[in-house]
Image 1 (spheres, helix red, strand yellow):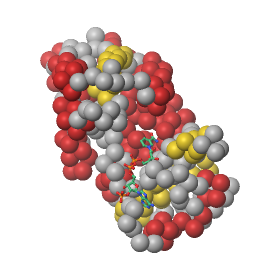
Image 2 (cartoon, helix red, strand yellow):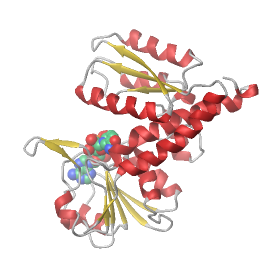
Image 3 (cartoon, rainbow, N blue to C red):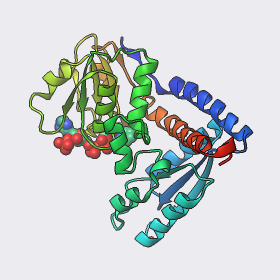
Image 4 (cartoon, protein in one colour):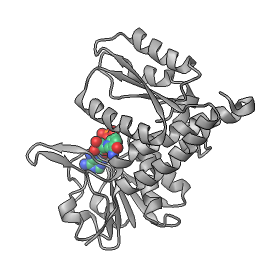
Length: 291
Ligand code: NAP
């Protein structure tokens, strides 16, 4: 039986650490604050928002909600972003995506002030992740994968890691972060030949392809650690499933993340850590530590 790499205990520890940093800031009169921008009432967004608000409360982070109508104009959205950018009490900005198709999502993402971009919406943040410069913040999900692996004590230096999926939200940034941790990374995508072989060759397999249960027993071997980033609603089973076929893969590998309860349980904890780091950076830049 594989070891289960659950997200909740890692999230709890990370939140405790973040709360200690937040308390230190509050003692100096700085309240770490996230501005959440939501357009419309998508069920996925509302569900994520509920988890986020609970996590923020435990982490000592205040949240300001800006909710726009699903049929709002681009100008209204840009004005909401500009207000959050200009507000010195706001340290981080999170905008739920995808936005309604009527809005220019790329323009909205780019409008976020880079120093408040706690979930890597901007090209500047992505450049920081790709260059390994330490500027900006990685996408919370990609960072959550790295936290999970670190907490589980999975050695990355010199390890062969295969990442399935090359989106800018998960696959590509996590591949760069794994490389920065000295892993030897193979990136796979929809045009990869013999995906199963590429997956089996890895010591660590990170799957983010958005295809329910796509990675099966033919893709794994004993000794591997499997991180399943996928979240898919399985209509017939009436529950969430990952991009990995858990029932087929779990008996083979050494360790695997469950879905739900793996990477997804960690993203809000990582987000709060980024908000508090953003507040700390402001405090460090401000004489006397008052933002
Ligand atoms: P995405 O933008 O749709 O990207 C999917 C990637 O998978 C693409 O690079 C695609 O290749 C690749 N792919 C698709 N079919 C493939 C196949 N048959 N073989 C190999 N590669 C294939 O998805 P995403 O936004 O990165 O999300 C990936 C998964 O993570 C989804 O299940 C999503 O729900 C989940 N997710 C989880 C969290 C969390 O907090 N845990 C957060 C966000 C997303 P091409 O580039 O060639 O098209």
